[in-house]
Length: 313
Image (cartoon, rainbow, N blue to C red; front, side, top):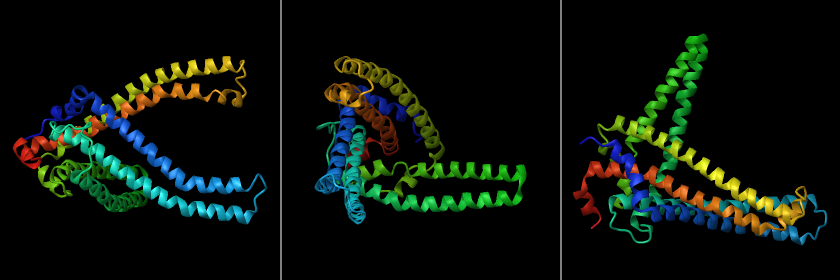
């Protein structure tokens, strides 16, 4: 059974039309979770350093003391980065799982289909598996492209440059084709509740070039949606920021060159940034729907509803 590219592309927009609150909730959840993780990271790393700086009492610090503080900062930053990274994996898995669940099991709504269970845990493990795979791909790519450049340099002239170009294009297309054969690993992992990576290769047999076309259409859709969002958000941001700055300058008596006078009215600036924050969060949810949804829909098409119904019972 050949997949329908139109159905896959439309799956994300169907989610936006049928479950707009869920889509927006995904974006807000990502935003707020990242802010919380970032705040925790800053608290772990920044507060001890700020405490030591405050303890100096405005005195000129000793270079050895500064060096010791910087060493402590570097030692403290690794646990914070690890916390943010691991937390980000879990948050991303929850949102990815919510999108996949909305397509494979739309009756399981809950709170925007967001939850953390076995399926989401498997998605975290899959994301961790991508790390060594990415390292191997990077090394192989370096060897292939480096070898092509060396061969082209040995040939010289137009022929050498053309050879490098053709090898890079062929390698890029081939690498993308292979990657797309594994593109259903996430929905398969979610449905099985365990990591499924190589199974995607079997499931997508004979569909490689259709997936290739789907991927490029998604890139075009992403660009179109991003450009539209940039235009609208730019206009909204200009209106609210312009109004806020005009109000601040009037309150500060026109002292536009005095940052302290403007920052004294920071609540107005904060209020002016709220529309941009809301639009950014909503846009993030839309991107999740149109980028994650198609692959779940392709999996649904290839597997069929009977298997999926059995999976989620």
